[in-house]
Image 1 (tube, rainbow, N blue to C red):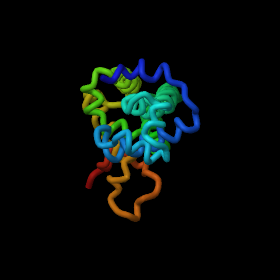
Image 2: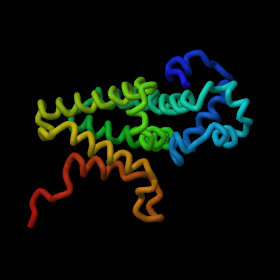
Image 3: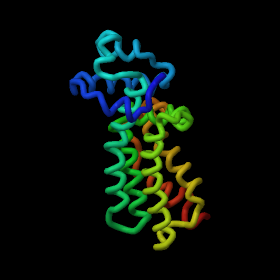
Image 4: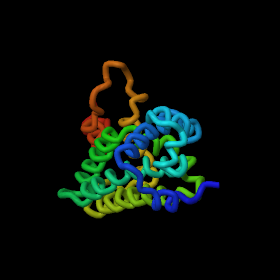
Length: 208
């Protein structure tokens, strides 16, 4: 039976370069096939090593997944916090948080999608509580700035749970290339338009 994620990862310190390769290949497989659809044999083959060798780098598949998700959060959370604590009113800071979220998601697309595509399973897995806490840390930042916006008058008083649902869905759609409408649109996500629509709305101020 697999041990908790924290115990599995804390005692293993293998060669960094090979470990990095395994984590990157695993992230792609977890994103595309899901945690349960990617076997240790698949991860080893994608990493160019044999399955027994994989155990010298990670004790289990769960420990690989934990590292993949933590790599994303290790980059994302400090940058989201910086945007949340930045200059301007709360609406401007929400705009910066949106831009940061999409930017980090694109930079770490496989890790982001490995996280989001497997989140229902993560939520139901007691060994992965540490990952839920990291996601909750991000949500606390969003809720804090949303509350600041109501207080400073820069944002409407809208249900924060529903607002975060919309924000999270929009960010995921920007990062996940499956949601690109046409083949010609495979460039950078239109983050500026996302911010304009979420903060300013789609309707004109003076409809005819």
